[in-house]
Length: 221
Image 1 (cartoon, rainbow, N blue to C red):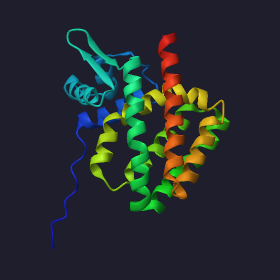
Image 2 (tube, helix red, strand yellow):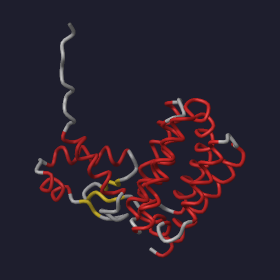
Image 3 (tube, rainbow, N blue to C red):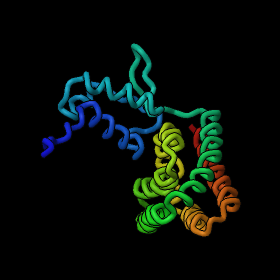
Image 4 (cartoon, helix red, strand yellow):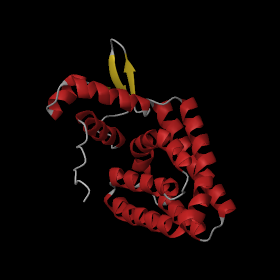
């Protein structure tokens, strides 16, 4: 009989990464806000070493900017960053949808449907965090079921930044209107019917509109 061994627990730095990542995405730390390593270490009851390691990983994910001798800060995108990010999504998401349809149509539809089901109560409660999480789950489903790990890994490089921008900037608007919700339902319908040209057109509009909101928010700041 094979030896039964428990998986090693996540390292302290990984636990700190996961908690800080979600805090940034959920807006507990505002865009551009300073993150004190000492404060985080004290809050977690750990030394500063795993916190410093976590900051390095979050920087690699694009969520944190580390300025030597100054400190660590939540990222603040420029107008150029927003344009590049939207172009990236417009290029990848329609292709991921087509692959997901052929690789695991039922699984993708189930995951996307669950995300949409979570959006409705979030709108009713005007809970932008819950809406942002459901929105992220909807788009991530395309990559989770596409069957191409390189495409999925490419999206993961930007997904944290997209999620943070979504919760901080677009979700507060989305929970006050049904435009985003209606677009997600239409995207699911087009996906389920395999209407990829129409899906790509609507996805382009959907992502572009998000970019417009980001750009306006940056101008205000």
